Length: 164
Ligand code: PNS
Image (cartoon, rainbow, N blue to C red):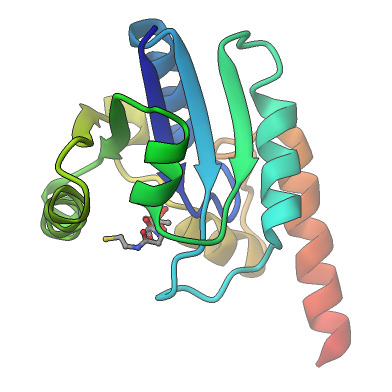
């Protein structure tokens, strides 16, 4: 059985992530989506909230499982007996950071390979940070995220503005 771990901060999940998860689910027998901590980012949503969004938007894909984890990705992947870590590559700008992470992970555990899938062209520009920014500035985010995630972002924006 082939198992892939699809890691990310998913803060929150976008159509770009869903595209990569769906495509990984066609290649591997099982895809475990790992919602992890990216220490370089200040998240809007808790791991539980991010996990819940992912569960809702992937409920129609039978071989996908969603798990939250606070620790090293390679430890998680090896505990899952994963054959590979799958990541989406959007543009050249992603490459340097993703390459650095793939090499570091391989150094930490040489049994775990990183496989990159190229993002479909319509999702090339998408990122969770840009979607949050568009939402904050009153733009329509429905082309970028499923309805339940859109509601979550708009709710969070309301909470943030009431705190000011
Ligand atoms: O969606 P992101 O924010 O680009 O994902 C980055 C993520 C969460 C996959 C990365 O920060 C990560 O693997 N975090 C877990 C901790 C870890 O293993 N860090 C070392 C990776 S080189």
